[in-house]
Length: 381
Ligand code: PLP
Image (cartoon, rainbow, N blue to C red; front, side, top):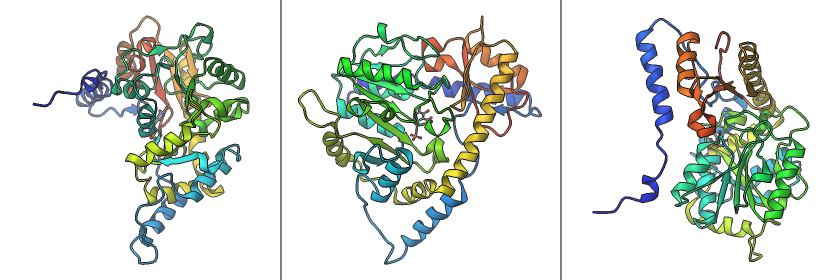
């Protein structure tokens, strides 16, 4: 018999979404005529834009021709797409050759863990997007440092112990908060002093509207020396099913022995990834044209408007609410209730599905996450 991998056995259970689905199904069975508002899901609810769909179908059709067929592409991705990401999303603050195109931000989190191995110490925000924790456990980490919260869920860095790696997500899932320039300057200085590497997740940067909120860690002086950035087309342009993302490893980012992180990333990447789908990359190129960007922005604006409305309703009811301005999530506190009690209350009284905050770590207890990815938020709570 083969021994079970103990790191998989140590993974926290995925009970959260299974239980949400179970309670939702039980409600529907009991109340078949009551329509439910689903503000639980963190996923696009609108179809892909025509611009993106047409580009993908054109590429798919041309793959069926002698001239248009292409087998494996470059592992790091289509050069034109790398250039367009560097130009459109980073205003050429980074070089196209520092970008690796991927099949999404979540798979990149797992690959990045392999880059650093199991001997590094890791810090995460609390509450936290579970993929950072799960992929750390998978590599055999036993205990992660949970950064203590300070203002608006930005960590209190003066009380945070040094770690090798810091996972940081802004705009944040689940709290919906987004770090300011000043806060990110503090984070960069902290990482620099400690010689740590930040893995900066910008999956929701397309929702930033406030000019004092950076869309990239590389907008902060010194960011290139201490951070890897991971981005995604999922929430920017509805690619959650299409699958497309990218990572940035600047050439200044070095290991202790002076070797370049980007070189190891390239070496690792090509060992077990054969490049993102050619069709998805054609969609990505189209999403970054002025027309594609505008179409995605209109949808993002709608999701942000939903989040604003949700926050307004919840605030009027007396709940402390966070986020919902530069991020499509609202994080609301239900005083005196556990997350699951609050979940049941909102489900039964307002016929609305949410996500219990306790699913994002202990400090999420007593909170619910409301998602703006919805067609209908009125009377949601
Ligand atoms: N990062 C964060 C913070 C997310 O919330 C999500 C998805 O919900 C992802 C990454 C996953 O992105 P992708 O679909 O590109 O794998």
